[in-house]
Structures are given as C-alpha cells and as structure tokens.
Image (tube, rainbow, N blue to C red; front, side, top):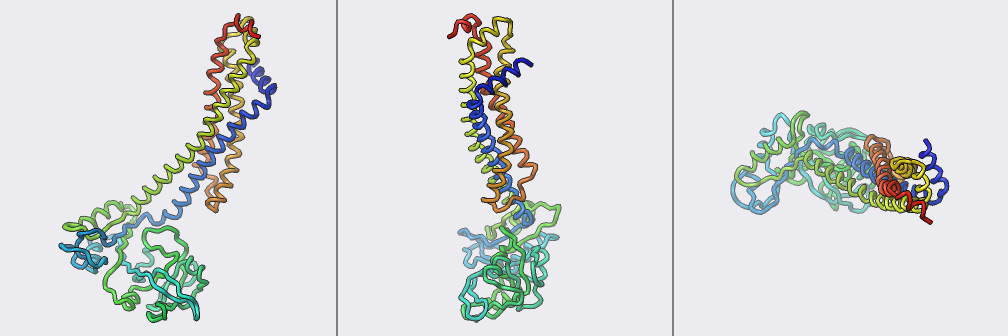
Length: 398
C-alpha cells in the first residue's frame, strides 16, 4: 500500500530521529516489564518459602493489660506469667479436634559447641517427639531424636558453627544445664509461622521440662487438616478461651499469608507504575517528533490533497509511521526486558528460577502492548492535524 511505503520512506529519511524515538519506547518497555518480572519473581520466591506453613494456627499468651491468668483458663486478674498452662492446652486440644494441637516450650540460652569454644546464644525449643512429623521437619542429615539427650538443629545454625551429626552442645555458660548430642540437621525452612528452626535447637519436651523445671508452654501450634479453614479454627479457639477475658492471642497463618501477598502485589504495581513514567516521557517524545514531521511536510500534504488524496489516507500515513516506531521499539524493549529481568533477579534475589513463568510472560506482553498503544495514541493528534490542513494554505506554505 502506497501510504505504508511513504511512512517507511519518511522513517528512513529521518533515521536518527526515528531511532531516538524508538529508544525512548525501548527504555519504557524495559522499565515496565523488568519491574514486573522482579515483582513476580519476588512474590514467587516468598510464596515458595511460605507455602508450607499456611496450615497453622498459632496460640500464644495474650500480652496486653487486663488479661486473665494463664493457669486457670479464664477469670479476672492481671496476667503475671505469660505462659500457657496444661489446662489451656487441653482446652485447645479438645476444641480443635481432629486437628493436631502441639505444645511448644522455648527459651534463649547460652551454649558452647566443642571444647574451648566461645559462648553462643540460640533458641531452644522443647517438643514432644511424637509431634515432629506433624511439624514437617525434614532432615538433610542424621535421624530424628531417639532419646532425651538428643536434639535436632537448624541448617543455618549447623553451617555457622560447623556442627555435624554426632557433635555435642554444652547448654549453659559452663555447661551446667547438661549436654545435647546432635542427631539430625533440619532442612532450611526460611520464614515460618510455627517453629523458626533455621538458627535454633529442637530438644525433647522431657529434656526441656527437667532442665528448666517447666510445666507450662510458650505457644501451642495447631496444624489444620486439609479441607478445613484456618479462620474457623482460630474462631473456635478464641470463643473457647477468651470467653470472659482475653487470655490468648491467635494467629491465622493463612490470613497472614494473604496480607503478605497483597502487600507484595501493591509493591509490584508501584514499581511497575514507576517504570510507566519513562513510557510517558517516551510518548511525549513521539508526539513532538510526529508534530515536527507534519510541519516539515505541509507542502507535500497540500500536493497530496490537491490530487484527490482523502483525509483518512493522509491520516493513515502518519499513524503508520507512529505504529512502525512503536512496534519495533516495543518488541526490542520486550526482548531486552527479559535480559534485564534475568540480571535484576540474579543480583537482587540470587536466583533466576522464576524467570520463565506465565506471570512474567504477561508482564513482558503488557509492556509491549503499552508501548504500542502509547505510540499510536501520541500519533493520532498529529495525524488528525495533517489530515485537516487546508490544501490551499498547505500549497502556499514555504
């Protein structure tokens, strides 16, 4: 089609100007798509580390003023000892059945690894071994506890202090609280709503009770079975234990995950919008270039109109020009955005495993489409102005 060829000719004649306009579109598409890729990869990374803990409801003592006493499962007074009693545990266990309620003890303690080593501080959890499978603690080495003197340790703790299976850990500044032998190393779990084991020790409940003379709990974790709603379990616990006074705080991991995902979604939208600013700047550049093209070709337009060229044909010529710039710039930008997304993910997240996903493909597609639409939108007014020039005035233009 002749007007398509004229549009291509005009781009070739003003190649430098057209290339600079394309470059603006390329930068805009790369900014939008690469930010979208980063946001999607960030959400995917967080989702992987949290997906395994979306089945938990965590019950802890209420730390606000005016709460009931922990030991009696209710009643007036002020909370003095922020612990959960065995009576509280039995109430929760009955209320959430057939879901599993797991009582957990915890403390922060000084310890030594090996002879002559410096004191280190880490969290020690006390858990009945029968609940270990319910907590889904996967081991990378060794076996699960087979006695009160054995313990499991997190992979980060093991790596940081060069601890192997069979190593012995002296608990207390001078080892006065005894020694634990490492029987297994727990696989890295990342962020967790039940037990944060990566930099901790998991001992048996009996060992913890005997060592610290405890008969209460720091938290109770309810593992909700598939098909049941964690929000319903949370409501049941609150109704059972917080009838008269608020004595427990209940955290629903699924609701917390939803909040986290929503927050990351807003962050992704925000950074993508920032990338869109560069596209708006590129659009202004396209608009200026198209207006210059119209002003430079006023006499040519007058000649075309005088020999019978219709307004819509003149308009199409300039829209084709904007479309060529937009399509080429957007496609090049889409290709480069994949490279940019790869580099950003590698540098900021340390992983590119989530680069090739449907969400990222949509981000690249959206960036390309947005670039084309911006170019066409910025070419419409100059094309309309060219089509509506008075042929007589155009022929007189110098």
